[in-house]
Image (cartoon, rainbow, N blue to C red; front, side, top):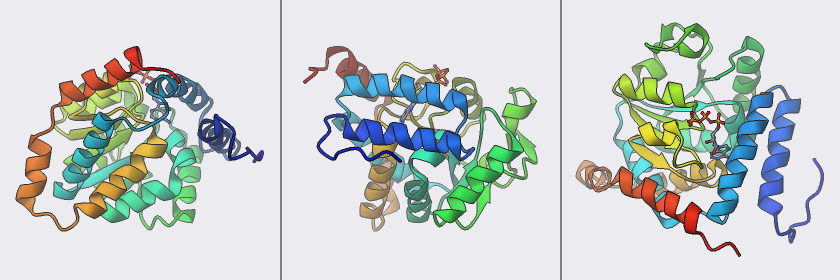
Length: 247
Ligand code: ATP
């Protein structure tokens, strides 16, 4: 990986870009993943490349949902695996969630490569390879999930999910926590908890909140979940992007 000077003004963004490139070279990230990254970068630039207060609140709410869930599952695609492999494993550990590989452009080679990469980063059980259940309303390849994974989950974290599948999962009655830098995307719009933040910042921050909330009672967690206003979070993010004061 090319060395990027720590004082470079676009240091974090360049590191992220290199991780995605590396993901493509390892056979983890698809070429479409590069385009998705570019789209995300544009929004992140307008957000000031920071976690805005409404996103931090949504991340705390997401942590509370994961802790309250009967069966939480974290969905991992090629961009998430390339950007936050160790961090997503830590989040699974902190919340007792399962990890499931879930790809828009599913190939067995990429599924295997991602599962192996997660295991290298400490994951013990990685779901998604059995593909023995289907999400209703989607065509064959994109509908595949594990019966004892996403299909059975009550709460699913879907970072960078494709809009159609996010809508289909919401229709199945799952509580969807979506990380997406575009507050207008269909994924963010169909989420119970839209988190408008870069996955690179969001995942470790959800883990931090989950650790802080580990001793909280069910009532306290439910209060956090119930006090969340999804429309207000989406509006705050859109306002930050449209009116942000670019430095
Ligand atoms: P829609 O949800 O409106 O159907 P889409 O699924 O077609 O949109 P894609 O172009 O596939 O959207 O884009 C991927 C989405 O992921 C974009 O909305 C982009 O902002 C978001 N994204 C890309 N990189 C990141 C990242 N690092 N962190 C968070 N979100 C990201």
